[in-house]
Image (cartoon, one colour):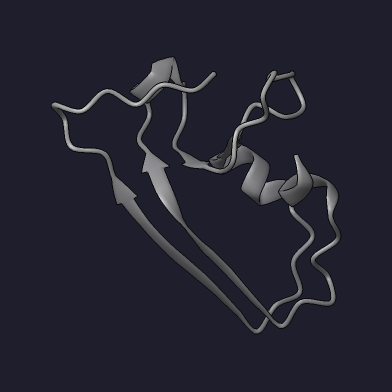
Length: 80
């Protein structure tokens, strides 16, 4: 996934504005941000940026903005 592979060490402000998933959504074991899913998912690029993957990002930002919304409980979200 581009967000994982790209170096963010020179970015002063990093913003994520996307859907958020809680543990258990889409059978996820942990919370995640929904990014643009690839046409065919792989173990390295499944369209999700999990909480543990966020901790592995190399950030040296002055500010990180996280704006997300949760899907309503009665709406089904599916990834390819």
